[in-house]
Every structure is written in C-alpha cells, then in structure tokens.
Length: 278
Image 1 (spheres, rainbow, N blue to C red):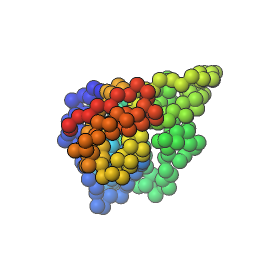
Image 2 (image 1 turned 120 degrees about the horizontal axis):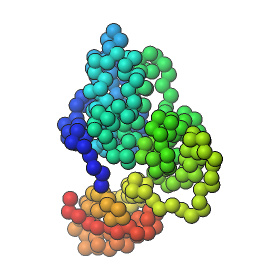
Image 3 (image 1 turned 135 degrees about the vertical axis):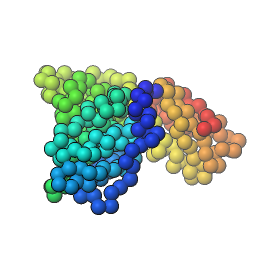
Image 4 (image 1 turned 45 degrees about the vertical axis):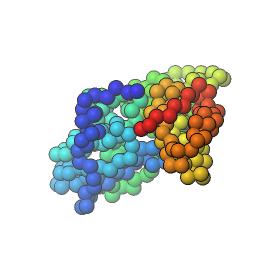
C-alpha cells in the first residue's frame, strides 16, 4: 500500500478544523459521494482576511489530511494570498502525498476556488460539468485534465489518474486522456494500442469497490447478508462477510463461486479473494 508521511498520519488521525461555520460568508463544495470523494469548505472572511476555516469531507485518509492542511494554510491569509495556494502547496505542507493520492490535494484547491467565488457572489459552476466530460466514472472534464497536466507537469495517463481520478474506473476514456496529454504537451497524437493495458493499482481498487457496491453487496443483502472490503494488495482482495453470511454454512462457496468469480469477470481474472475476521 501507500507510504504516508508522519504529518499526513497526524492530520488524518487528529484532523484540525473539522466541522462547519454557522456564519461562514464563503462556502465551496466539490466532488460527489458517488465518486468517493467530496469536500465542503467553510470560510469566515473579515476585512479581506480569512479569520476561520473549517471543513467537512467524505473520503480517504489523504482527503482528510489534505482538507485539514488547507484550513491551516488559509487561516490569517488575505484573499489575494489564499488565491495563490495550489494543490502543490497543500501536498508540500504535508511533506508530500503518494502520487496515487494527489487528487486529494487537487480537490482542496478546487474547494478553495469555489469558496472564493461564492464570497464574491459569482456563480459557482459544478467543476465536473465544465467542458467536455471525458471520464464518466468520476465526472472529470477535459478542462480539469488539461489544467492538471499543465500545473503539475504530468507526463502519463497514470499521472493524470493519480491527480484527477480520470481513467481510474472502466478505462474507456484512456485514449482521450492520451490525446489531451499529447495536445497539452505539444506532442503528435499516437493511437492507443489496441490491446487493453494492465490495470494500475488505483484502477483495480476503484473497480473492486464499484463492483462490490453495485453488483455483489445488493445480491447478498437480498438474503440479509453483507460484505465489507478490508484491504487490497495487488490482486489479493481481503473481505469480511457480515450479517447472515457470517454463520452461513455456504459462506466459503459464496466467497469463491460468487464474490471471487464476479470480481474476476468484471475487474481482473487474477484476483484472489480472502476472508479476514476484521
């Protein structure tokens, strides 16, 4: 799995400035629960200075740490100073983020931009709907991808996935992402190879989560059972059965003939499902 800095761990385990501000005069909200990450940023601005900042987020450890870091960076800043904060500043504040988690810092920058627009009374467009929708799985547009490439000097499709999540689902948008990379970097477009590329770790993880949520869990719940995803290491998927599945004599058949078979069909033929007691 990913290596986190001590500061990321600190800001995840003991997040700063969690919550809302009742009299906030700048609020920015980005992401969506459907995409697995969402952030709502509350700012109190007095005489052009940010006197308080709080957040509410739904996401992973990096999303919580990045949101917490952003609020610490904002306090005491003027609006002009705040507008210069980038996702790199958020990541640097934390001592770095795993490349697969850089999209969490990007979400913080987007929430800040939305909050400042809200403060000035400007219409806040839904970020994921601006421009051509490239990644339908995570609602990422061409404009967001172009910006991420330019501002972070991204060079590969995997880089784009790490920063924006685009391409981390079904993978159908990978050729379009490559076109955008070639366009922004001034390179001639080359056709993507016909054969399907191996899944990256983040693509595999996102697909496993999606298939469990949309295919496996609904079927188990019909019989009052449930399943919890515990961890993913390469192609090994660790799960814990819940509800009626816990004491079911056919639980091992459920794991191999249904859970593992479904994940192999829809995600990766090399997946091995193991039950853990967590």
